[in-house]
Length: 239
Image 1 (cartoon, rainbow, N blue to C red):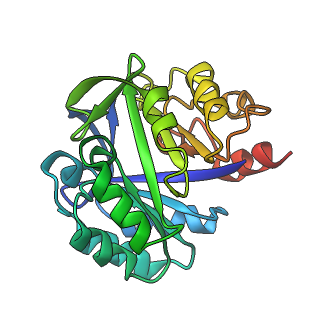
Image 2: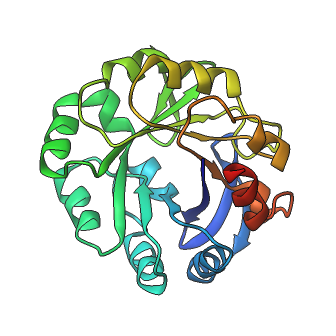
Image 3: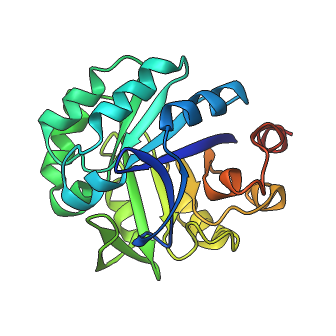
């Protein structure tokens, strides 16, 4: 399994939220570029970047900061948050070392646009399925729909997306442990590679995903709080 450190950006700073609530941020650094360099030095093979302002507002609010981060490191990145049109998607794809973009709200609201993005950028479009109580949440996690996460995952089968990134919002940023059961259910329901996110608090949590068939794990708050060392996590996931 691949261990992917997360950098969430709000107002140009590196923060972490609790359960996706925009009013629950914890500031970890005023310099996201420095944070990215730290994760690269610790052995990260890819870094997960999220524009939190963009996710809420529906546009690339921290594009400049993200571009600076990418220019300062040599490992690839995946980017999500506010990518809801071809222009924004293309602007990110054109930046060197962007491995893939992550589509969330669009996958639910505008499947035709998702098809278009996959056609334009084959192998470089991932879908983020964010869920609360098993139901899909969109627009920066502010709106919870009536659609089950596993149902959306199944709808994506055959669409040509690179992977699904599944986040249990109720676990995200809480250090309370991941939702292995639901992640495993989604991974078993599709042939699309699945990356897990939300709730990691220890190396034991990372090891709990072994045998589930997932491709990787995104780790955020546990790294910033010092609960998990990135090098140790990478070793644990590869054993």
